[in-house]
Image (tube, rainbow, N blue to C red; front, side):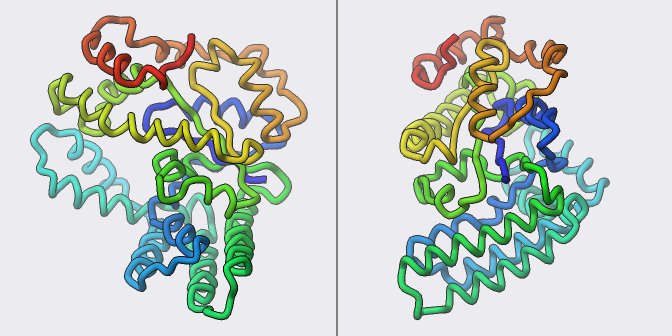
Amino acid sequence: MIISIGGSVSTGSTPWIDIISAYDEVRVMDGELRIGESGLYDIVSKIYANQTPTEDEFLKVKNTLIGFGEKNPIASRVVFYFLLRLPGVSASIIEKVNQYQLGKRSYDKRLPGFSLFSKKMLKDLNLLLNDSSLETSARKLKIQQLMGVYFLSLRNIISSDKKVVFDQLFTPKLLFDIRYGCAIPDILSNVKIVVVRRDPRDQFIDLLLKRKKRYHTMKPSEAVSHFVSEYLPRYDRMSAMLENCDPSKVIDVWFEDIFFDFETALCKLEDFAELKTRPAVFNCFDFSDAFAKVKMYESGKFSNETAYIKDNMRRHLYKY
């Protein structure tokens, strides 16, 4: 079994991955596996829906996905880390840096054979794309089989007899894109997806403190406006689609559940992922560091901004 655990930026998926990794029957890949950002799910969903991606679209996905296997030099990572956090950096420079970083993820180091398996999958996908003799139902079945083999190959690099967890295999931004809907869970029958949510008031503050998405370069009032404009429609789609997705394939948990409803959330995860024996380590798990990230909005530092989020995103707040 493959389990994808992920959330939007600063929603707290890492603590849940740490919890799941404590089970003997689970192995976790080191780091994230953001292959969806290559555009792979886009063209796969199109083919599944009996649409035809353009040659340029396919070539772009191919080049990007294969490039993910390459290593981004340490020196470049350090320079880009500080460059992207400098106030006044032009949008064009940010775009160029992001595009460069997007193309190099060192996946071949963490998943030896990643590029090889990706090339094989893309070759078979191209053959399928050019096979005009297939009926719609047969094409859907072929897509399911092809992607099943690909993800099973990636899973077996980590473990052939354990459940394997990939962080950010499906980010909510991609999974709940209006173009994909619930198609991805249908296509990938051997993958189970856990979406991690968080109270958006704390998410916003965390983004500011971690200097992410360049909110720290804006006035707080401007930053919160950008935040709500981006995340409100995304979370609306997420909530709507969670109601329609097969609950045996997609579930959601909250970061806050770790502190306020841990037993219920953990039982939900155990049933979903078919986890049998709960680790004894849970009796002495220390969540004190993570607990400092709960109810940050009560500090009053960004009271106007969090009040704005509360007014506009009330249906997405955690129910304490």
